[in-house]
Amino acid sequence: MADSFKTCKLHIIRMVKRKIKGKVVEMAAESKPKGKVGRPKRKSRTGLPLVGVLEAIGFVKKAYQSVGRKEKPFSSMHDAMGMKPAFAKSAFGILANNYGLLELKNGAWQITSLGERVVNGDKDAVIDAMKRIPILDELYTQMKDRNADRDLIEDYINRKRAKLNAEGITTKYLEIIDYINSLTATNGKQEISSGISSRQAEMIRLMYSLFPIGKDEDVHSQLDRLIEISKENNFTELVKLLMGAKPFIKSHEDLKRISKDAVKDFESATGLVLYPKEKESQRHPKHADSAVENEEE
Image (cartoon, rainbow, N blue to C red; front, side):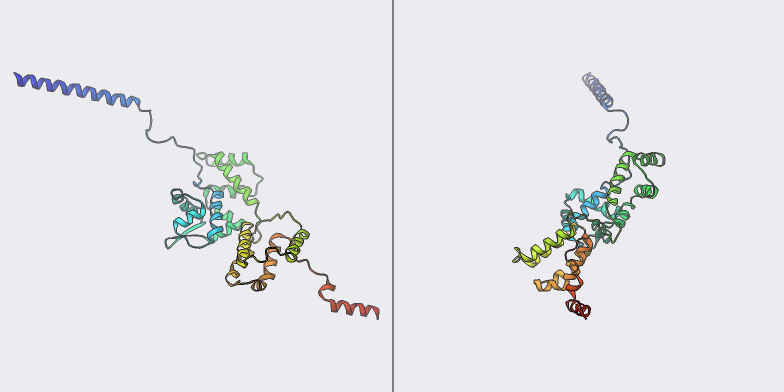
């Protein structure tokens, strides 16, 4: 009798537990939102990488100023770009695979030749990097020869690529086009607006020549500073000349070997004239004197 009572009691306890458990599960199910759980609502697609074209160019420019095209380990390269390690892990892949501005060689990262051209304001190189993104390539091909504004571009995307976020893509595309239009296609140089005239440039040159207050400054320090400023202004040819000559420059005398080429590259890049051409009579005094004598005869 006792055993029978005990068995009945256990049976009742199990039934109560099942009911309680079933109620908890039921309540939990009711508290869950309808539809898919655990996934955020999908945003409108843009078809663009996480790192935009102009952002990518900015990162590579920053790194190029400090490391050039030297091969660097991951930690050094992301520091040079001002990136945090976690972000760099995905960003480096985008810079390399999507834009071709960075490459991994023997375990080290290096800015590519395309990346260097982009940094130096080469219009064709920037277009090349942009066109590696399919939607931007398509828009550029369709719109480059048209007087297209935002409305026309958005309309094209909505008709041809209805699933994409037309507004977001158009904004990014127009930003890139504005940047490209600020560049010139000649020799990969950026158009420079100096804000000063050739007369003023000549005056600055004469002032420093006559009153060289910084004369005692180390030659290499001055050269490094000139290279840094030249990079910032995209004076590509001048940078190449100075970088190539730098290992062989020990004194001001050594600078004479590259002085003519350096001045020529600077004047070509800025449109300024540091050394105006002398008058024929000043450059060739003997010929001038003989000419006067001939006239007198």
